[in-house]
Amino acid sequence: MANHYLSIEGIGKTFTRDRAATEVLRDVTLGVEKGEYISIIGHSGCGKSTLLNIVAGLTPSTVGAVLLDGKAVDEPGPDRAVVFQNHSLLPWLTVYENVALAVDKVFGATKSAAERAEWTKYNLDLVHMGHARDKRPSEISGGMKQRVGIARALSMEPKVLLLDEPFGALDALTRAHLQDQVMQIHATLGNTVLMITHDVDEAVLLSDRIVMMTNGPAARIGEVLDVPLERPRNRIALASDRTYLRSREAVLKFLYERHRFVEAAE
Amino acid sequence: MTATAAKKLQPATTPARPAATILTLPVQTRPGTGRLADMARGAGANLLPPLVVLVMLIGLWEVLCSSPTSSLPPPSQVVTDTWELIIHPFYDNGGNDKGMGWQLLASLQRVALGYLLAAVAGIGLGVLVGQSSLAMRGLDPIFQVLRTVPPLAWLPLSLAAFRDGEPSAIFVIFITAIWPIIINTAVGIRNIPSDYRNVARVLRLNGFEYFAKIMLPAAAPYIFTGLRIGIGLSWLAIVAAEMLIGGVGIGFFIWDAWNSSLISDIILALIYVGIVGFVLDRIVAFIGNRVTRGTAAS
Image (cartoon, each protein chain N blue to C red):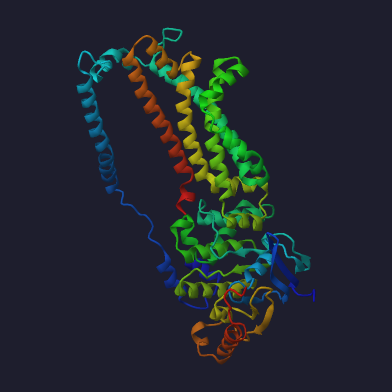
């Protein structure tokens, strides 16, 4: 069990507020191999963001442990870089400075100033944002902000990249464009990725495996679906691909037949 | 840029290129030629209305106070009475008999010292109260009570403590300016979005890096709001405090003029006090705008 690159073992999380306890996650166990692209999908309120925050170390788990590359995770760190849903760029820094902040902190001791500048530039070019390096976040579009957020996360050379609904706030065309870029980057760098999403097509298109969560409270992993599609994947060719359609159908059935979203269960 | 990236990355899909061009925002390329004309037009639109109102008010004042029985002098009288003071702002006959420039500088010096101390201590305490809920629970009620004490009420106490007018005046400035700085800084710190904290945690910024790179810039708009209120209050307090402590300073100049029945001198001093207060406020606002350019925009 412990020989996975990233292993989430028996994670449970209970939030306590004013003596009222809410169990959000129960006994979540998942092994992720190096270079794998995993999506976690589920209805809103199923605790998928909590799970990601636990892996990131931002939220402590109540029970269970997260092991990354043989080491237990108990605090946030650049080896588990997070791309936040709302980009979280620092508005007083330029695009370049936002990425440089991460690069200088993570590689301050190991790389020279020139190497760090080169590395910052390389990561911005990777997301095609080199042209806007001196703009501030308020001067660029939502999709561009998210690309800078991705560049910042990639620049930390994380062991696992955590994406928290990274394309959720974008329009459909920008989203498709960014998904393609993320696929390219994944193909080039071979990152291990854990992505939260609520978009079925996005999950099938990008993932090697899709982790489907049951509804909360006390959400569990309901099913894990393998997506045996060849890479590189092309969204137009896949639109009529039988494996793609079958995978898509499996996720839809899970979400809308067996685990329909029940509003306000309490 | 796209070309360099494409060399490193084999694009699996071609739409990357046109989409990227569409996303590029044509940001603020102001034509250099029209700028001067724009500025002139803007200045005209901003300066003309207050100038018209000013001329009307002075005219009204002239009419109302021109009768020989009037207790206050009309503006023409004020100018002739104080002409020597206006054209010689920096004369020095020793003692308190100094030009208006020296009087104002003496007051500004006290304000500068008291205000700088208040800014440093106020931001420090504000950070403490904003960061630690324990410190907030302990200190906030005390701050809320102390801040309602009128500035001049501190003067007798500080005279008793320092046994000298100069440090007492500076203390009054300090204690006047510090409350809005503390309270606004604390609010700013408490309002830092949790996303910025999470970014700092993922990057493992240490306490000092977090303070300098996240906390101060994120709270800067609030801090400058406090600093701006603080400078206004300082200038309000110094005039009153100087009336009581005496010596060189615009406040005592006014009091001295009243005792010598030089009403025109008082009016001139009030105009100077107003202008200096306005300039101080604008200086802090200008610095604030420059420093928080990025933060406020989002």
